[in-house]
Length: 521
Ligand SMILES: Nc1nc2c(c(=O)[nH]1)N[C@H]1C(S)=C(S)[C@@H](COP(=O)(O)O)O[C@H]1N2
Ligand SMILES: [Mo]
Image (cartoon, rainbow, N blue to C red; front, side, top):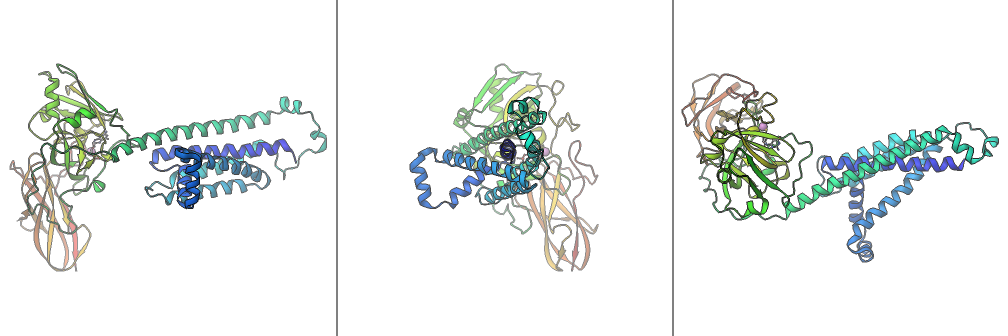
């Protein structure tokens, strides 16, 4: 057997596995999941008997995790070399075993306590990348043992000649070198990105928000009707809708976070995390809505926010009289255009740090976001906010406005039927129709329901937390057999009746009456 070809096959195996692991670690950073090596390491820690862990700690101390990772990498390199040699002998065998290694990583990933929806992805990608590259790289290494090779005469060709004359050899080293470099760069990049993510998450978890200087008034009795199928009055953080342009949730370290207020102001103001937390923070309930919400849609949620009024910060900066807009900008470059008067009037437009008693979840803007009652999120609710530029609507444009959406986005009067849910079969007899209605910062004074185009009947409104939140409503209904269509419409505290005119979400919010079809058996 040709020794140098065997070495190259081993090298090809290593290169393929390095590329695979690198791809896996990079994907891990974007999938917010453990990389293949970390997943296997974590599973090994769980599987290892107590004495082994203690020995490792005794031997390596606080470097025990680094030692474990190093150990895994050494074993992986040895296995990879073997796979390359195998692949040369038995075509596809190396590729198959690369895929099998990927599956081992996937199984390991499922055992992690923090395994998310994308937990399997990094190892799947790693296995696939290695399996796909090992064959071609081994082919470049030289003729396989099954391919007829020139025998004895070439074996005695001087090595130096071989080096100079063999372009295949150069191609092999170019490709393997490229695979190793790309894999190593991806692994490094992925590890750094994951490290950043973990650092921000660790800070978030260990964080204790200050006690509010002003707590929210208690929720009125009966505000939450607790009807099965009806959206709860307060939306739990893990059920709160999420809308943003961020493929990878931005990881913002609060200790280095700063907000700059500048533009058409008398003096620039910079706020750090510590100084923000030292301010008298206040709680407020505000319902957040997305302009993309269809009639009947669920891109809406209600939470208790903790934050500091933006108007006080703007007052410090001193906006110029001819300014009419604040362009807020996030750490990842999203921008929103908010009318200046909305941020300077008495409403609870805040820089929020807390959501339902916890620090903002990363995907809802940790460490700091804006919450502004009365405006759709795209023109007000900037998450991961780092910059407020006082400017004018005729000088600057927010992210979605450049995509054709309206520059200003006041929330439109809307309502939704949650019970009975659409398409359901309902048992005949006494039941209930229930839902929510909202027009933040205006408030809802009435909701009416019509069954099968019959007369409008007044639903009973639950007490509202405030005009800044949605309100629940219900109406007893004696359901008779057959198919029925239920519609509703709200009236605002300003006396406006929800329009029946149907409009799509673009450019400034959907309108029309929600309707639900049910079958009563
Ligand atoms: N940084 C950033 N902030 C953002 C967005 C975004 O894409 N990036 N989307 C906005 C939109 S369109 C909405 S509706 C709300 C949604 O907030 P949520 O994801 O916390 O529900 O965030 C707003 N803030
Ligand atoms: Mo939105």
